[in-house]
Length: 139
Image (tube, rainbow, N blue to C red):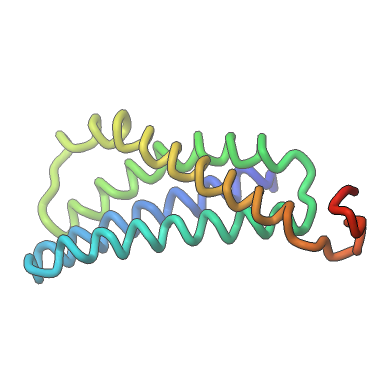
């Protein structure tokens, strides 16, 4: 299976699940809603950083383009998954789908690309598993 499809699919579902989880917390515990949003976004950022760093550390071929395409898949998928999940939690209707597929998808795609890019930078700075990095930092 294409690497970008796997990353885009799972990141999209993860982002949609986080949206659903934050909505559930908002419904059942409104006083905790503001703090849980920060925790949720931090979790999303950490997952993107770690996965991007792992791809760079393993020297995945074309990792920048893989993550760019994965972000384009994750954005709309997260929008759809988030609307479907929130409809089960807080009665979100179909009217929320268009904003989720435009602004929400763009935000998710940007978040996936940015965190993976930083993760790729971190992974490139780490010693490679085959020891191909020279002592002066070059390859």
